Amino acid sequence: MDHVSTHPTVAAVTARIAERSAVGRAAYLDRIRTASAQGPARGSLGCANLAHGVAACGPAEKLTLRAAVKPNIAIVSAYNDMLSAHQPFEAFPAILKRAIAEAGGVAQFAGGVPAMCDGITQGRAGMELSLFSRDVIAMSTALALSHDMFDGALLLGVCDKIVPGLVIGALAFGHLPTILVPAGPMTSGLSNAEKSRVRQLHAEGKVGREELLAAESASYHGPGTCTFYGTANSNQLLMEAMGLHLPAAAFVNPGTPLRTALTEEAGRRVLDLTSLGENYTPIGEVIDERAIVNGVVALLATGGSTNHTMHLVAIAAAAGITLRWDDFAELSAVVPSLTRIYPNGTADVNHFHAAGGTTYLISELLDAGLMHEDARTVAGELSAYRSEPVLRDGGVVWLGGVSDSLDKTVLRGVADPFAPDGGLRMLSGRLGRAVMKVSAVKAEHRVVTAPARVFDDQQDFLDAFQAGELFHDLVAVVRYQGPKANGMPELHKLTPALGVLQDRGHAVALVTDGRMSGASGKIPAAIHVTPEAADGGPLSRLCDGDLVTVDAETGTLDVLADLDARTPEPREPNSPTGTGRELFAAFRAAIGPADQGATVFGMETAS
Image (cartoon, rainbow, N blue to C red; front, side, top):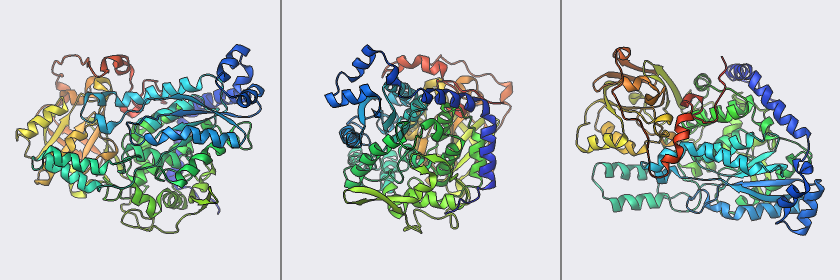
């Protein structure tokens, strides 16, 4: 098929990103190309160094690695058996090592990275470490790859901060070909809509803890990723759109023959991508301006996680590219909403996959010129992602996907979208800049003007709700939740209470410098407010009763008050301790703002 002309807005945004990134990107490419020109780094290791690196290998592997003529692949894994999404990875290293050995290479387990669960830590002190864990994972990935033993890498991770951290770390070794190896979602259990209903009933005191736990356990019930469209599954979709997965690999359930065959194929494919193979494809060349724009477009078309307004910025920066929230906003105006996956609808990711999944989604976006078809991927050009994997004779082959969605309540084409524009909005005004996920917010709830009720802690909000103080129109402002203040925790514990207020007919919105992520629901929530309160942002001078406007239609976040005439109320310096938080004081001091990726690594901002 001939390439479709790129949509003018997509082309213009991509060109603008490339122009502002020219200096940083050129420096990055020069660095990784210099590294790749040196050949397998283990060839220049001293004898003692190399002996240490192969000491635990078998005799055949030692000979192979000493000769430096066959590729050695690093396996970096986020396995642990507490997280359902990562539990399947226990078996993956053995599968990959066997497949790579049969194909003529060697694989070594290079290192593990931490993997914490936002679902477990939600509303708890541990959530204040969640965002920081991304950069810890990036550093852990770099440590795993730092031994100069490898010609390529396989990264095993799924959830929240884990995939972005793995990619950022791998981009520091951008000369190495890299494939992300997913584990797949758990099978469907109790519907997400029913789970949400029981949560709200519990918030109203109408059901007890036993009923709530039964509903949660029926929803989160086995190995694999949680099935709603939060950050974990947004990660998976973006890795395909950006060319780091094998085509349509994301949403195949764990424990199935196809899942195993895809894992084996990832091992074989990465060998071909090394400098010793036929199609050298380093990750630093895959993640270019086109790939970043493809990721943003896929995020917008599916109403994915708001966390990626930070993660994609940080990933881009790791590859020498400057991505801005304005780019998201401009693309959102022309990218239609093509999916309805909970919390944007009632279906889960298994339903999305069955309806046509990423194969149909990417094909539609490509046919509309909304993605760059010539972008490099681990499977060739992005056009390869028009196909889906099937089993043949115990192996996997890729065939053409469906020509039309099999369930148009879940997945639609560009000609018949759920909405003409994307699922994210960028807001700005006298309260700063913010992000809102609107794909689950009904049109009648997208504009709220109401008095502010200001809280410095999410528990204070919940206490006020339980005391019956909030049953009126209001904009709930939960501040001092940004990266510098306390690590920018997600605030989903507020969602059921806010839902009760909205269902009782009150005009309700949330404004916060904290996060809500991909599970942002039916309440209009202006999140990631920048500059944050702890950095002297306008939220620090807001008072109860100030009239605040949250308008997703015009992109406005405003207040009818002269905040410049006020000074923030004196506040004790935030030095959280317990649950390991005292160990991350250096992160809180060094972290950048949300609109620059909320990273401790620093980011050069182009003028």
